[in-house]
Amino acid sequence: MLAVAVTMAVVGVAIAFDWILGHPWQVNQTIAMPLLLSLLLTIIAGHWAVPFLLALKTGQIIREEGPQSHQIKAGTPTMGGLFFVPVAVIVTGVMTQASGVALAAMGLTLLYGGVGLLDDWRVIQRQSNKGISPRTKLLLQVGGAIAFSLWLLISGHTDLTTIHFAFGWAIPLGILFWLVAIFVPVAQSNATNLTDGLDGLAAGTSALTFVGLAVLTAEQSPDLMVFSACMSGACLGFLCYNRNPAAVFMGDTGSLAIGGGMAAIALMTGQLFGLFILSGIFFAESLSVIAQVSYYKATKDEAGTGKRLFKMAPIHHHFELSGWSELTVVGVFYSVAAVLLGMAICLCMYFP
Image 1 (cartoon, rainbow, N blue to C red):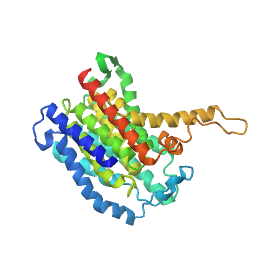
Image 2: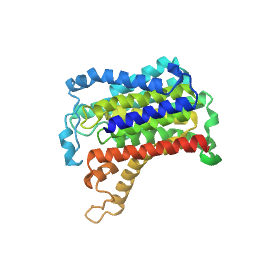
Image 3: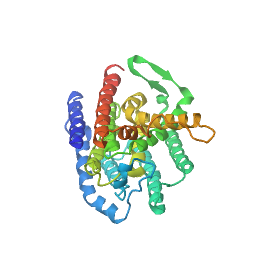
Image 4: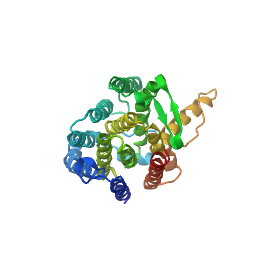
């Protein structure tokens, strides 16, 4: 039911704003059409991709220190990003005729997806939760962000160095913007990665975020609107297989690609404030991990044992261990993401 509810909400937003913005009902000029096409094609792709991933023995390794209720998920195929991300990229490429901005957004998405794929594959090879080293992973993410920032600079996107907020507020960053441009893809991809801990959580919240980005970028960049819509639809299509009980997990292959795509869209359109609001769930997940680790280190005693702010981080596990069912946690997070979607559209479109 949650998957149906979030799908109806996302599709409803797409159709409503196509009407509000006066989009002609042509496939590549609406939010709803590319979204629905990507949703359908992802469902079709998943019909053979999920059994294929299972046959490859890409079963998820569940970390022992995680909630014990998750141990029954061991062996569920992962690397689901291998089938839903390419669907969004291919549909975008066809609909936008592989325009420059679309290629840049798709490039960062695939690059980060590649980093995730490498990490997932090492986890499967080692049959443990240890993939590539955190340092290697971070270096690859930073390298991708630098390459993307250089493309922004070379292609003449120098008018993006001022970050705009609601009610006419703005902060001109000048050269400091390029540090932000490197930071955002790394932070966003790691945040979406941390959110991918419960069945359907990352897929559903990402679908809501991407449809929000589609609405916010519709007037400014129709090609990035199409890419946002395609990613939203692909996430919804993946949700058909990832809803509780999940038949497949997206893995880092999917979660890092999603974060990279969001960052690319926001950076190219100057919608960093909009992305910040839309990403409230992802931000909370990241902040909970940072706070947990920091507090634990700050309160270490002579025996090397510290105190914890939460029962477990990221914060969705805290709610699980507090007695909430997995479906309840996901449902509440969907609801919060939907509220944030409304706030982002209201502040960025009607009170810019």
